[in-house]
Length: 345
Ligand SMILES: Cc1cc2nc3c(=O)[nH]c(=O)nc-3n(C[C@H](O)[C@H](O)[C@H](O)COP(=O)(O)O)c2cc1C
Image (tube, rainbow, N blue to C red):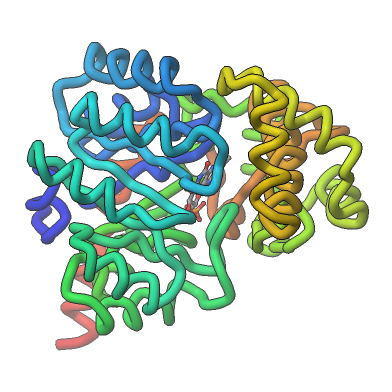
């Protein structure tokens, strides 16, 4: 296949693995890149040293192009993004923050940068400071989509910017791939579909649920991690939403985060307090959500675990390999083209 995205990244198919915390680990990244797409490492749960190790591991598993993300609102993300630049990662994807310095740093060694955005204002800003593309995340997406669905968001961003748009949120098969290209996207990024594959480290309890659940079995709420976040509808997720922000739990959970990213807790605590109540509240929400996401992905904890999942969970009926997902999508998209040629004349 040939689109501006395949040309830009030097890949065979315009299909990206979204950066998903605890899921987009080196072996997943390599599986997607080796199958002709672009794997993106999630650095959210990693500290700087672990990020460096993960990049080296990816390089030992594939010689194909790959990417890594930095969710700039997370503690430790700026340090991780610096490692991505030092390691000359071919494609850097940043979200939830201003990444102009990442664009500058990556372009200095010939790297590419894509910004995850949810509206035209953010997309134009990313274009202005030189991003090579944007990922448009629609309402259907797992985790942080906003109010507008991909069906409307993708063409609106394709009209708003000249750089290529990658559609995310609501894509799981060849029909979705063909539809995204028809809407003006140059490729797609998928989270939920790749999360339920043989190579995915997602716990079997949640892989099973993800296959069983229907298109209406997710919900988006501000009360999971403080920004609109879509998760699988389970008893634990509904309880977390009812409870909202639990400051005592946040105190203990943020201690774990400080340990994980290896900064002294008092430094993290003082930094958070100094950043003002709004930011502190947001980080407290994130600390609790991180804990619940981790319990779901790694431990399969159905009592306390909460899992970000997109509406496409209702389109998943099996657990294929990453290669099978990509091959099936490409074949199906070509069938759609033939059908459309017949229908459109
Ligand atoms: C388990 C899980 C963890 C995620 N973690 C992150 C993250 O750390 N940072 C981020 O920007 N997006 C994260 N996402 C969102 C994905 O990057 C992506 O936007 C979304 O999965 C696309 O929608 P889809 O699931 O319909 O394909 C996560 C998604 C899932 C399913």
